[in-house]
Length: 288
Length: 273
Image (cartoon, rainbow over all chains, first blue to last red; front, side, top):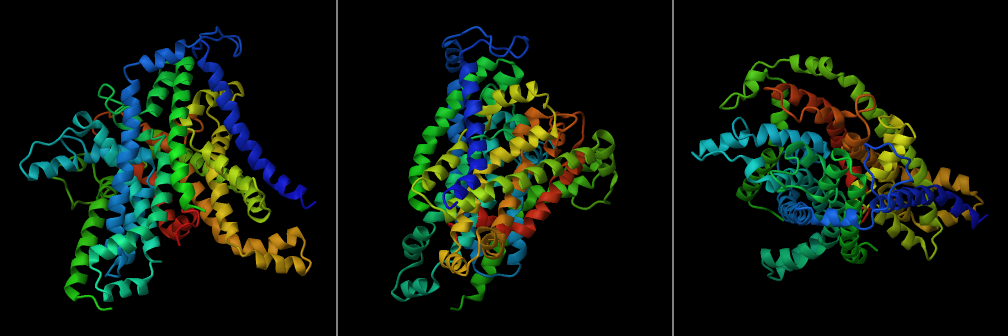
């Protein structure tokens, strides 16, 4: 009883997750070695063997390296922006001031906005080169408005995604700052530590753990950024804002080429796992 | 410790300035939803105008907002309940019956989340197609549940782990069986954790776009599906777009305001106090 019960309780979660991982992975692996187009109605397991053709096709696609690079650039920049700005913002709103409650509520809001709305909001109402609010701001300063999605496509996507994740990082840093030892701070101040010294020797180390958490969670979600690209730039112009997720999506449900899409998916899985190894090292240390 | 009043004033002003700047896009969306199409694209932008409710009716007439909202509600609530039902016992078991492998299992679960959704897209699409479940609420609910499951197990695990084992031992000494122990000791202590886990799952499912765009369309489409229909412009439609967007995000944003404390606690896996 004592040994059986824990297993019974765990079984549903472990089994479903195992299936959820292994079945698609096995099928993706199989698809990646066959010729399979969604448009031809052959039986599922009776496809012509394609060898490494699909893989070759996928990595020699001119979109491939840009997509890998964009994926990493997007994840990296959003993490840097949200962590740095999140810490600064958290420090700013940590001490009491009039209206702090409302500020907190307003600040967190973008985190709950669905990415599809986020994308449309920025595409049409903020970044539109004629009617967008940013264009108006540019005109106020006498500058020619920027055509964001055409001239700076990846940067535009980074801005949208960072806008969404900044509140999350900030909120977590605020929570952490509130547990900072005030007496220790005061003692350091008495001993003559300057504000920058206190920041780098007390505050930053204290924020180590929450930073690890923020980086881990953001990485998990940023690997599969999709709506922000599908709705705004369609990966373009050219391949300037394609990430791996979007590139594979294009192969699969727009070109209906399941074989090539699957080969691509395996690349994405490999990349994710390389990232995961680093991640688990950083986070594993901080989370036990 | 006294801060200089000038410093407080400076802090107040800069905090409010930054906040309003960051909130501006949402505030603008809100305002635009109540404008006419002409007012919506006015240059310079209009801050004062007579609000109209017309756009909201138009959104419903054009694409049956209520159907999409209902689908969103069913899939998010369904996946949240199903997820809790599967995740809670597993997390409970791992927290209170630790073995050498517990840590490995937890790491493995999290690693399944590292597989980008697109890696599973073709197989899931093909499976759903052959099961006749394309464009169905069932398929979407299941996919949401499974993709949120690792995070739910983690959140609940860290939550249960915070319950001091002494309390449980005391209950066991008093002869409480496993069910009583759970019902009268663990459950009351972990209600907050269950709530924050459920909340996050609800938010994630409500906002999920990748699966919603690829697995469902007219019949089982969620609000994310509805919103993406507005991505290709057909003339000037910003007021209607804003109204549709506002109707899609308002429930979950307001909901998020009330639950941000629990959400942070859950999301940081209890690592940030």
